[in-house]
Length: 66
Image (spheres, rainbow, N blue to C red):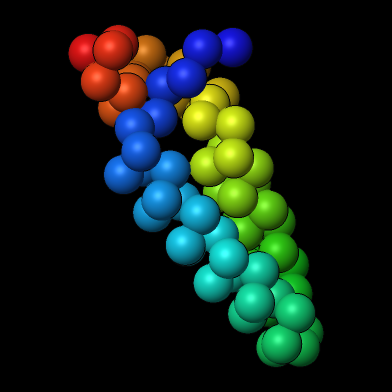
């Protein structure tokens, strides 16, 4: 697994993921799933710097891979 996300991409993913996780834990009903699953995925990809969807589509925002 090589890094395929830029620092900016990772920051945006982390902030958006945390916002979705906060929504998942504070709101009830369907928002728990709508915010929880994508929020977790976004935070995990931000932490690792690797996005499987980017790899599948051949996309890289990481400067070294452009």
